[in-house]
Image (cartoon, rainbow, N blue to C red; front, side, top):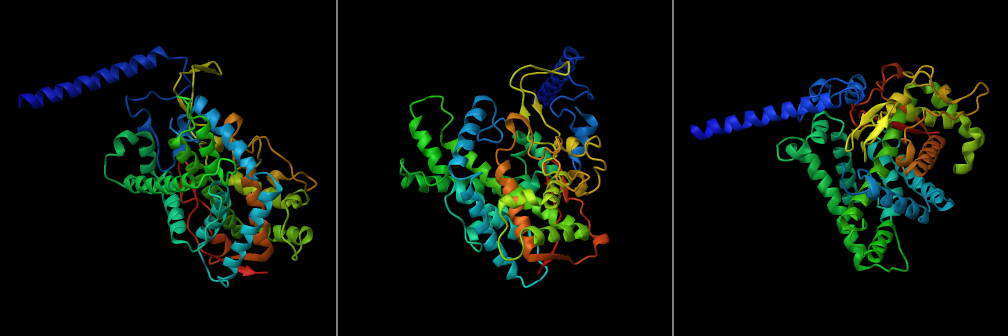
Length: 447
């Protein structure tokens, strides 16, 4: 009895101290921090957020540190980013060879779609297999067969863990992972899926280590291993096994999901707006015709198609809150103080839906990217790949994939939904840290 009383008293004392420290800190920084509601100890402003609409909630109350490339900070991020950009270029990203690689993979996709014989299918894994094989050829040096069971399992794990981040439980886990990783719930399945993906990458690294030729790197993993050998005498090097596994996982993960999910959103929007689909078909027929594959140089002659691709990305922004960044030093921003260590979310969706730049931001309308003469016009507010020094380093590859895959598919097929256009729901399944498209079926009918 005495022990339980002492324990309760200790807990109350700790809670009181936390509250007092929080109040003291908020008063100390009062007038310096950006405006926003007062925060509670430990949970911050979580109770004021609608976790089913996290982006909207954060806009209303507005204002991992970790290994690997995506969530790292400071010198680690700088070194890994520079190395990754350089290595991707070495393996053809942004060059003619990558164009041919995407065209080749698009051919496999066309074959798979023709095999459906116009039946209604869920396009999810058709698209993710194709897009994943493009990045796989860079990071692993080879592509997967579309029916490879391990490959399909990897895609399901990526799909499941990414979708989890957009749920309310996923956002709780993101904020309180140190506690929730020990509790039962759906986060355990997502955690298991991420562990499975990490184990796959680690296995690939081990295979490359056994057959590595320092004079002839075959893929991204080889290049990283060679850099590890060169820096093995540096005690504080960022080129070590953990960073290799997580950087490779980040490339594989992002390189698979972002483009494939953008296309899934796009197909649904085109079925909702058949007039837009018809105009894209018309432009493809005029510029490319039906007897050759699209080329990247065709983009300049296809302003309407280019506008449609941009509008798909703008209208259904994939990462509306951007990727969290951490302030590395006390920073003044518009006369407010952002203390060192503050986690900051660049709210990309607020720019992509800004009426100052897009006349009717809530509508899907390719005219947002066309001038009065029907020519493509750029917009400074088009930031789906983020902005600044930490913009998405896969932007060039993603743009190339979106153009080739959309035009190649639409050159050969027209889309059909099981619903009439007015009944098609284009709203996403989840909007959290990511925008997840809803599941649907469609038919690819030969043209």
